[in-house]
Image (cartoon, rainbow, N blue to C red):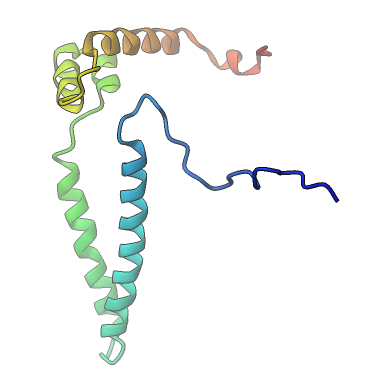
Length: 136
């Protein structure tokens, strides 16, 4: 029988990283680590409360702590440059992009602002009917 994949089976389930987004692989790695750590921590907390009466209440109550921390942390996250540009707040979008691209010598914030404007214009001009068009 001939091997259909001489160089190995196709990569299924691997995260696709964008060459334009610097640090995407590291971000995906950190996300997987955070999810796995959270599952382990939940298991350990539940194990610690196994002998307590009405333990389900304590388990549920302890789960509120990370959720509250996430809610507070989300207040400090800036809006995306694309959203800011869509709302006409170009100066704020430029500030966010400059902060995101700090340390990247190849960063061209003006070009990114221009690309975001073009993408927003294309998006505004598209309709639901465009989804049914054949693209070749």
